[in-house]
Length: 180
Image (cartoon, rainbow, N blue to C red; front, side):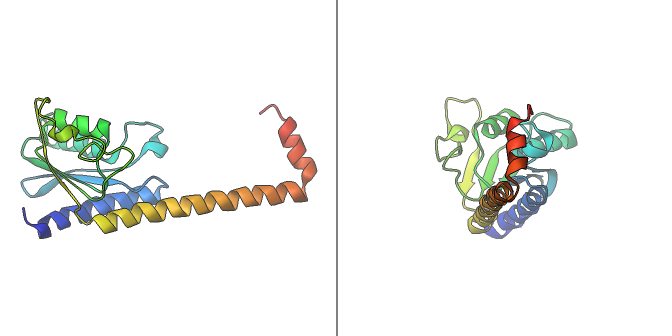
């Protein structure tokens, strides 16, 4: 697969990440490719679903399993906008995905080469080819912008609450005394 084709599929994963962002989710997206066709799409839904396992990769893998009517995703490629975590790397190995392409490394949780290389560990009964850096800057920018805006919104909310308590001190005292 040449770089142009890899970038094409990563752009599809970025589209998924933008869907997550619109929902207030961390903007991570993934697609599973089989024979030049997208057979699974996913974007982060942890906040929406209140389910820790609804990562982009997990959703895309499940959709691909359903599409192929098979738990094995041999001869498939996964494109994801951030390095997979341990849970997602485990699902990649268990589903037998052959190739994984991602944007930037995840220095706090990446297990496709950063904190560890679970996908290349020869002690496992399956390994996946891994390539990092596909549209890395575009993927990183999505995450950086999201977290910058999140921090800014939290700061504004904190300032708003402080101002409200200064203007209406009796209401803030009642709120403190409330059993809720």
